[in-house]
Image (cartoon, rainbow, N blue to C red; front, side, top):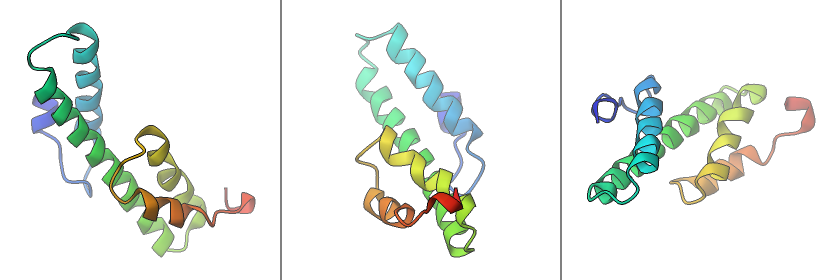
Length: 103
């Protein structure tokens, strides 16, 4: 929970958020039938959503700056891991115009 409490806004460094997601997944592996699982699962979803928002904002910045090789990775990464993330449709729309030359 320490990493979870130290998570920063999506615009900031996501090191603690990545560590929180990793630790939540360790919790699920070690204690699959714990009474705390529903609470931890909610926190895990929030951390994953924060990572998704951060990735979206980075990709949107590169898109607006017209640096198309920079927007490829952040905009492509989210929907495959978590299909029901916020703004998934917008992310797919923005990343749809990437040509092989831009990669």
